[in-house]
Image 1: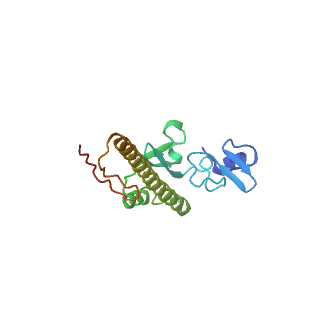
Image 2 (image 1 turned 45 degrees about the vertical axis):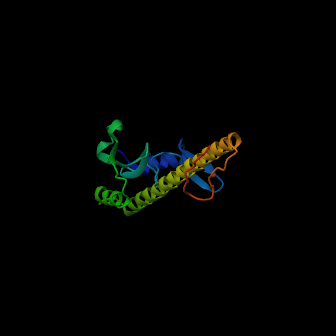
Image 3 (image 1 turned 90 degrees about the vertical axis):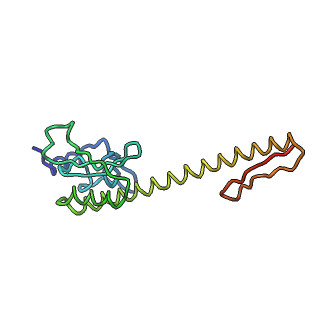
Length: 170
C-alpha cells in the first residue's frame, strides 16, 4: 500500500534525485512532473493519482497514474493518445480526468497548451529556415548564371515570400 504523505516526507527532507535546488527555488527534473516545481501537489512520486502530458516523436500522450496499478511498475502509467486537434485533446483530458483533483486537471491542460504552442513555434521556425535555405540556393544559382551569361537575367528577390521563375535566353 502506498502512503503519499510518508513518501513525500522522505523525498522532501532526505533526498530526491530529481530535485535541483537553486537560489530562486526548488525545481524537479522528473519527466512526468506537470509543473517543473518541486512541491507536494505536483510531485509524481508522492501522488498515487497523477496525470501529465508527454511528447513522443511529435505525438502527445496523456499519462495517468492510479493507485490500482501501484503493484505493477511496468503498467503504472496508463497512456492515452491525444489527437492533433487542440479542442478534441482538451475534451479527452476532461473525459479521462473527470473525477480527479481540479488542480491537476488544470495544470495538465496548461501543459497541453504550452506544448501545443511550442509545436507551432517549432513548425514556423522549421519553415522559415527551409525557405531561407531555398532562397539562398536560388541566389547561388543566380550568381552562377550571371557569371556564365552576358544576357539579361531575371534575378530572384529575397524580400518577397514567393519565388519567380528564371528564364535564360542565349
